[in-house]
Image 1 (cartoon, one colour):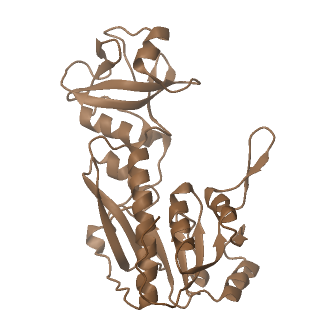
Image 2 (spheres, rainbow, N blue to C red):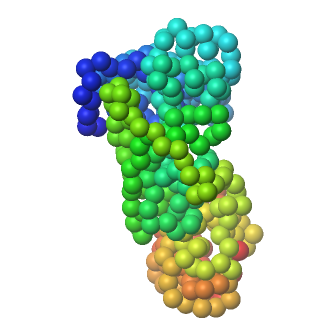
Image 3 (spheres, rainbow, N blue to C red):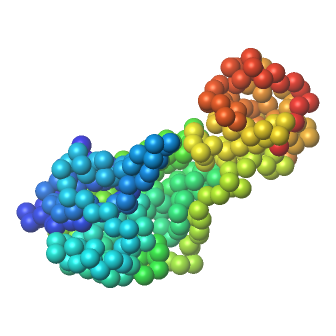
Length: 317
């Protein structure tokens, strides 16, 4: 359970907005606090699978478990939706991994609206801050709460918390770490607003860096880069959606690796053992530990080698 540090006996009326599982711990933390979640706003259910069954967002599923009112507007500018929000007369809107809010929405609450962002702003403004921290080989990241303003991810910072990025961290482990840390920070920030002690400092735009949306090209491993960069690309997308290369024209996802000493023509396999094989890079080499062949399940390399023989001199890329 997230620790509650609220000193003010008067709880805030909160509208919570979010979509993926990253937002769920923050929702639960607020639900377990003295604050009153009046409604949860999330995306409409999506139709998935051959049967086109409707699938709710992770936030909707959690809100149902907590017996909270749910709003699922198609458009955030819908006048009926905005009127519904006004009817709740919220003190604050809390946003975690949701859509860009129109000004008519984020200016509606008494104390404004704040967002949780998975980086130490102004670094990594944008859609994929966790991926880019790993891609760039950073040793530190964190989470930030900030008041919303018209330009995305530029609002005044309320509070930050720092996390180390360990050499063994990948997308899953860092995502999980920041998810839990973010829930703490959301509750702490809400408490600060309730207590009237939420300071807000302007971001230094000269220190800003982007974290643009991930594309398939971003996930492609380039063995003509240093092995450390290839390894960071693997970490940034493991275990899903997965960094990838090609072998004999077929897609091959690399799910875990190590950067090691070695030299050869970039993309050439220079070593094969019982449970790994090693590919030369522009500088050093990448030892591949687990993979996912096209249209197959993820597996360790030992299992892969039993069905897909690999020899020194074979090429990836």
